[in-house]
Length: 314
Image 1: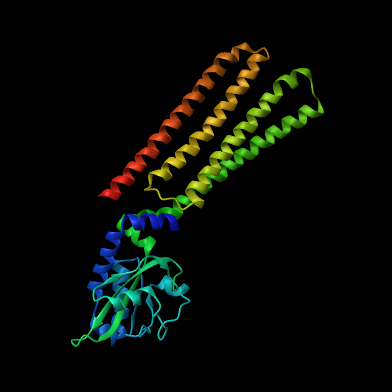
Image 2: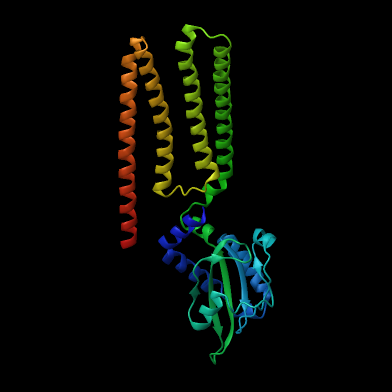
């Protein structure tokens, strides 16, 4: 899930994410965190087990100076470059908001200095009976993982590397076919240039074009597959992603069918009239595909606008 998709999903489910974070920090909070760091460590282990998107927990004093060290998940700790205990956090949004409010606060998304992921923080201020600020508890979450957790997408993400491997293997096979077709077309071109004949000059160019057209269509299909399923971080739950994939796939077929129809039309003009019916049929199929694709794109775009409008007004 790329940053644009993350931010779109965040604004779509902002209230649910903030409520979830507030409930997590409310359930995890213990005033003894400010005196006993072992409790913080234990709490982080429990949180990371039940809420895998929680990546950091620490405490601040009343001046925004970090009292505890950073307690993080193992994978976050491995890449963490930020300072821990003693670091000045008084300029961070979670400290500023928590200092000004008595209730639980949640920040807007920002890039974490610990994990370098897009995250949001929730914080709660602890005061004694006299109302004196003792300190602030802060919890960071990985926003993308939190959205996946809320949408039930975690299990699918675990299988994503396997799916990417299978797609890559299939595309490599397609590219081998492309190489064979290009080699066949090259061989035909070489033989036509070395020993041309009047009959070969009439027929062989069509065969060469067929080889090249098939190579182009198969290459474009493989390229589309590798881009959509492996290289791009596609949001499969968004209708526009599925519509883009189908549109590119149908467009590839449409180009190949149109070129083949033109070749048959040229053959019929050169004297092979038996190809005329097939040429017209293929051209009609191309037009049908184009009309169908246009209707699909139009209706899909309208449906997505209606869905966005409905979710905004609910």
